[in-house]
Image (cartoon, rainbow, N blue to C red; front, side, top):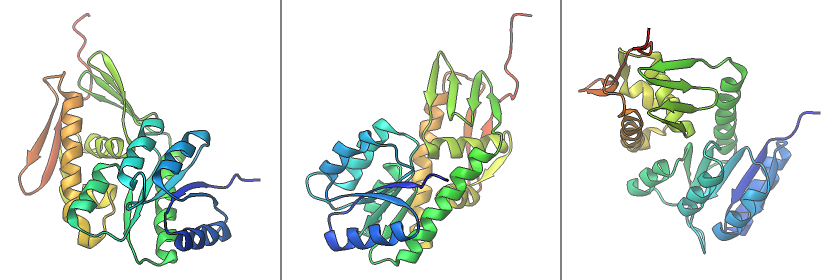
Length: 240
């Protein structure tokens, strides 16, 4: 018997939380519901989850702070924020906190289900394929483990960092179209495209810092087009 997908949900609106839980359970998900961020932060480490649904405005600990706590235990788990807030600063903060998606209330449960299924398809698709290992100058990037090794360190990448680096590697020494990358990795609502694009800039800066120990490697901004990962694809070996 196939194990159910486990969803971690924090929602302080009791009626909405129960309605969403019942709907998702009827769709064969296993859902744990918590009434505030503090209760969620306490409970999360005790069970393995596949996806998080987090309200932003919650008592005791808000969704952004809870997402930060969750990332310290599991840097890869997908997070969808559910919120009545739609200010651009809040959307951008959600993406910076590692959001995989962002739904503004009111939303239909059918739309939420479609967003969840889309994220799970992406994850399962990556797991079902033999993921390649890329040489990026002196660095080695294991896409399956989401591990970047080099410069005397091994860094476990977040899902967004890994997805962005994969796209850069696929187009190594060629231009990665900016619009394509935003839509492929962030899947933003059209109203939030610019905020997703700004979030991607933040992740590009993070990747540059991780790769800075190899002077042969550079992520270039190509004005009006996108990014280009400049790197030798085979590591140099001075000892021959």
